[in-house]
Length: 256
Image (cartoon, rainbow, N blue to C red; front, top):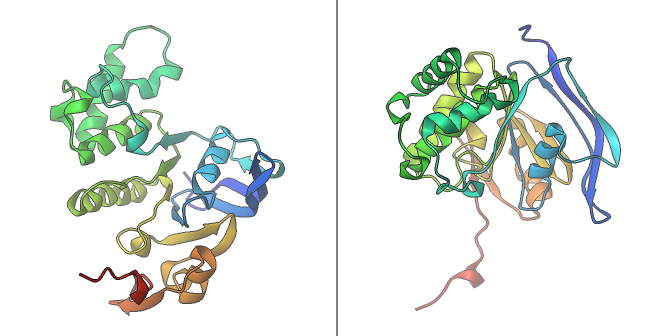
């Protein structure tokens, strides 16, 4: 794929729920090989943006233009999954190919593809295990594997490291960096400004509208963050990487 190829163009996108605008005139261009993180407070429209890109939300104004025959895959927040559903890792991953299957059972080529994807993500030994028996990092890898079965050009992820420990967060981000290095475009949402956002090549600061877009060093500034989150944050530079400090309020301290 041409690395300069435009996959999606979002032009002045406006979406609303119940007559109230959730996104206002959002413009964005995603190209092949891009790796973009979307940050902003709860209710800022991050998930709505993903759903609009998936065609699950119909805008009231603006447009989304996709490259011809664009293949898009989506990984939801792991908290939204029913992990007690009676299914194995291999069966869960195979569901990613359901739309293109002609037979109600898996063929030899599909089984081989599942094994190859699981091997690629380092979870081949889990293929027969029930999904409820997995750790948080393993769960995330399974749903990334399922998404890869669609052979996407663009991967959309909603809070991929939410609720996982530090080690798992680094493992997931390392995996995504490898996939992106292989040419997969990725757009993810995150609340983690320091652990994830500051290490991504491109950030979109969103609070119903685009507040900032670009590399972390130019986007994670005190001014942009205040306009995004409505609170003043101190920004330090450590080894060339922005470090965000939450505002300190003495009145919030509990005295004992």
